[in-house]
Length: 211
Image (cartoon, rainbow, N blue to C red):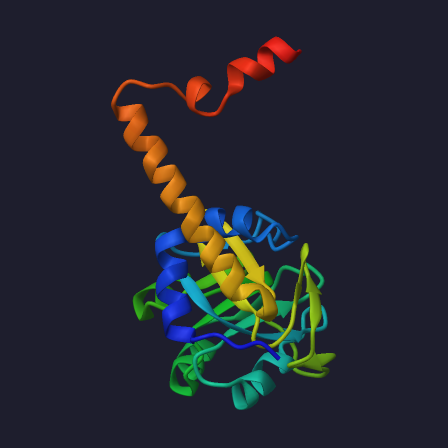
């Protein structure tokens, strides 16, 4: 199984950003754009630890905090059910366990506390409604997460632009191609500052003639 240097990958991913990595991957890595950071500037680049919660039930989250490796981000499928699955207590528990972030297609609460603690959370919504603790459909097993497959160890990159989940075997290639794309765009922007145009640089005039 392929592996990657987590710290080095995180540094490169932060420099490139989710949009560049999505384009570089050439794969269905993008997550539903309705899942957004709960505080501006939140950033995650870490290995995934996937789990599934039943609607309105957060038992799987409590179990995951006992089992998830340090340095991972929890990626939580709830069937898009909006409730307060996560709040200040679980944030403190996550930080104590070495978990570095949360991506959830459901809801969270205690937003001010989460931001004060500096814990990056991306969610579909915010809800004061609490949850029960009765069932845990899956913890640590691969899931389909709102447009992207996710398995333990896949690289999750989440920022103000959105979220991408890069398969473990594709991480190094995607980072390399992302850097090549970044370098190309840097050269293009330098040319634009010198007075050239995007139509010229991207060959768009030829496309207009072809039409």
